[in-house]
Image 1 (cartoon, rainbow, N blue to C red):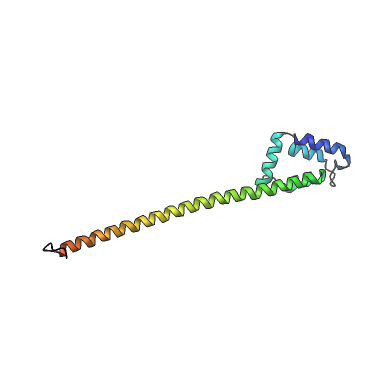
Image 2: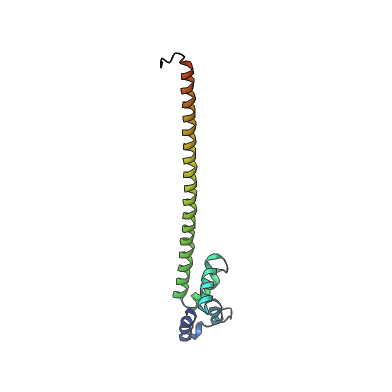
Length: 134
């Protein structure tokens, strides 16, 4: 998986195996991307707040700038795409609800107008005692 690919790249650059803080990069890579399930979990956690994405991105950037940049692009893309999709769904549902409210209000106005016209018609029929139609 991703872990073995990154470990191969690290073996070509052994100077990158230890972070400035003395932490072994390979242990971080195994923790975050050691298997498909761990990689999936880490990517999910990075965009949902389950873990600070900066920790993963900093580790990836230390391994190679390309990895760090790709990870940053992933976080950026997922955050804004998912945010826009969720906002779009919310706005669409709100628009549908307001349209339904408008339709109900229009129907209520039509019903009231129809009832008023029926009362006026009945009043004129009562006033027209000789059925002259005037």
